[in-house]
Length: 195
Image (cartoon, rainbow, N blue to C red):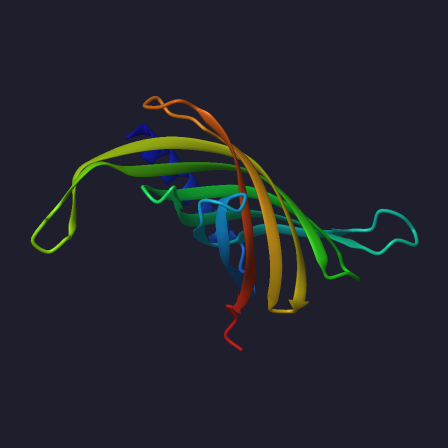
């Protein structure tokens, strides 16, 4: 219960940050998500930007755009065909982009909740050959994470990205592990202005 309350506070912080900043575009992301190239899954998300500024580091250098955002994400992936994982994750992200280039880099600290469901026992119906799940276990993990994202804009409204995240899976119900998650996807910047 405490974990859900904790994530509820993060969601409310995200909505308040979004309410204070009226961006003209809302990025929507869709990505392949998994442990390196195994355990395939899908991840969807968005970004709630709440601060953006420009800074010129030297006299003849191009200006850089800096941005802080809160990035909520939902993911689903399988492990070995018998474990289903549903994850909610929230990142506090810091992005740097040179304005004369289409590439950017983002560093993020995040916190997530992973719910894992595993079929332990099942039976087969001999009359029609169907499988019935008899016993299923559920585990909950807290995932603090550190991630790095690299991307480039192929057009003003579309960018491709790859993201690498290190996250320990912390649980009171099972052994703790360290995981490397990989995302490869695209972000479509949906216009929210009413022009």
